[in-house]
Image 1 (cartoon, rainbow, N blue to C red):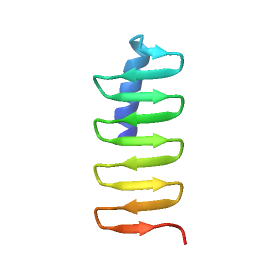
Image 2 (image 1 turned 135 degrees about the horizontal axis):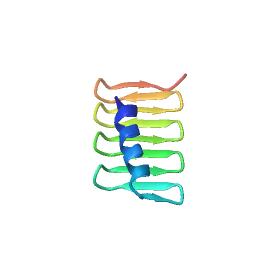
Image 3 (image 1 turned 45 degrees about the vertical axis):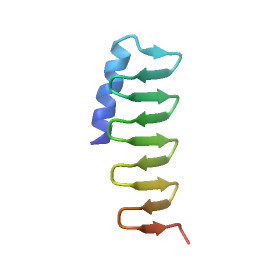
Length: 78
C-alpha cells in the first residue's frame, strides 16, 4: 500500500528532473525524500530511518516502541 504509492511517485520524480543532490521534493504529490528519510504527507506517512509514523490510523512505531492512540494502547518494550 505505502510502498507502491511511494515507489510510483519517486519513479515519477526521477524521470522528471526533480532530483536535487540526492534530495527529492515533489510538492504536488507531497513526497519528500531526503537521503533515506521519507515523508509522504498525502496519506500521512513519515519514515525517518526506522522510525515509522502513520498518523491516519494514529500508530507510531519508534524502534520497537509502539503507540496506538486510537485504541489507546502503549507498548514500550518493558
